[in-house]
Image (cartoon, rainbow, N blue to C red):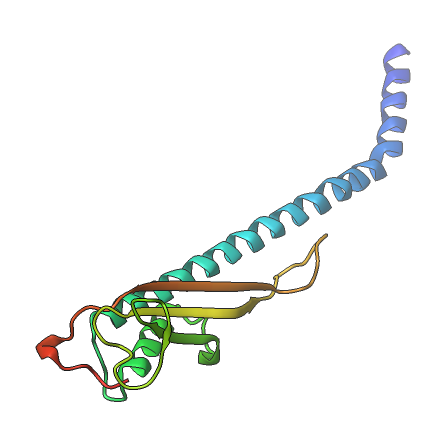
Length: 162
């Protein structure tokens, strides 16, 4: 008789607690999903930032060795940056290549890529949208990456055309 009463109490307890498992699952799963999406978003954002930094670094490295392509040195530098951006940089309007003399005054035109001048390759205003803006702003992240170095002597003493 006691055993029968205990089994009835357990049966009633199971019936009453059936809905609480669903509620508890929902209360646990939602924050875990938000945390998972946040980890994914921040990881990808860091990856994009590092890819852009590497791309401008490679572009600057290409520039200072006075390499050039059939359309000129600046176009070849842009191509190197786009190639190293792993497809993230589609808009080359965000990319700028500037030259400064030894006193850090802006130099333009012919001869700006002369030995001893500083070449700066930079990406400004690159925006990245969140995949899942859970519990944070929907505003996109804006990245800037820049790299600079001193120009080397050109091969055979002839400056490539910009």
